[in-house]
Image (cartoon, rainbow, N blue to C red; front, side):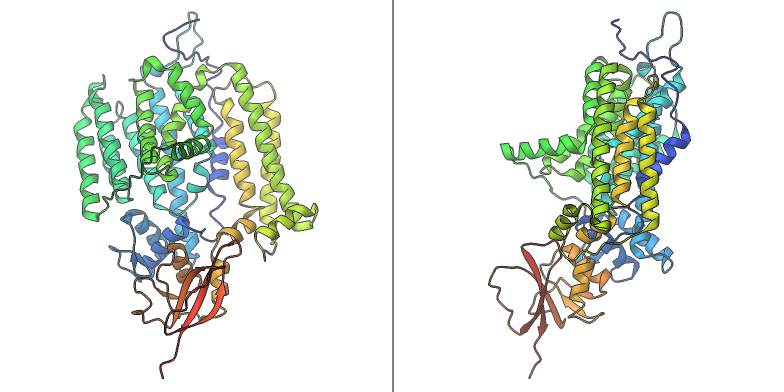
Length: 554
């Protein structure tokens, strides 16, 4: 049957996903990784270091710094994390307090994706074809089913896993983009709420160190509204231009405008970009491409153009910034909404292939995590534990009853879900995304329970700080010129030490000096200093951190 509208959905297929099941799945995705871990190396601990510096008064709130090195202009997320640290201290560890607003932002991203898809699915062009004798899906039921599928598609995206659970400005940017997408989606049905949401969204994105993204999506959103067939939507266009101007003005005041373009149109970069896009947006990009093909006559309609807007901007930003995964992150909510609109057009053989692939992939991944856990805890089989000791020498296994019980419950739920999905449940519109989303949540939960001690040992700088503490008394000043920001943040948090990274070796007033040096190289000792010891992270193979003490003046 060839119809202009490709969506054929019965009323039975439009039944919603049970609310309790959806909430539990979101909780299983959001909560693991918040508790019981250190800030991880690179972006996670760097952002946390700026927040801690603000909360402890070591840098002014308008100019956060680490060891004297100023931060990029991402004041809003740094203020948010520092505020929670100051508010919840000393009852909660600072790293846990800083992760609470990050978890709240991720939860809001999931909720805004749901509401955006719901509003877009209510539009006339997105509605399924009316049957000759009735029985097609009702408007609200169809919209709820599409919204449920959009949340499942977002959870299933592999790129959201790590970046969505870090304490970084990109999570605030992701919230702002999701809020702006909701503002565009709800434009036909809301008045002042849409305008307020657009202003807040673009100000948040600009204040989180992504002014170019805010400017681009703001202008594109204003164009979408201006070309809309809804008079109420066209009235929002001047307000969106005003919101864009407000975001640009904030970025100018913060000094956030910076040239980050790094385009090298050669084959190696193209291959790198391709690999990143393939796994980062998996599996939603497959369904999104199918949506663009099946709904190709509706590209100018709201349910396609609104989510496509943020996806295209994120893809262009990722490519222009040298295959940046953090720029690509901002396109995932729109990609998930596009993926949801593919479901009414899928054939039964396609949904069966998605189910079987997800069942095999995530069962194997979960089994591998259990094998590694048993090897580490019991020594059987022996090879995985030996490999871990080779890759992370000095690791000591830790046992936790709550972690084991949570992993057992999650694994039991996975097998129950496999039994449910392989039964006769062919009607629900969202059924094809249940296993991919649940499989990602299962593996993340197992990694953050059974595998958390290993991940924490490998990705935390705590061990390095503890090894440095053997040679440098707590509270001392350490000169760290040319040190990486994650190392500076680890020294200030785990030490705790006073770190001077803004002065060179000759002008610093510190009694100790820390330099990162190649292990096999002949390193020159700075004049006036004496080498005390060399320490390195357990997983480092090429570099070490050499500790120097200032020689006593005669």
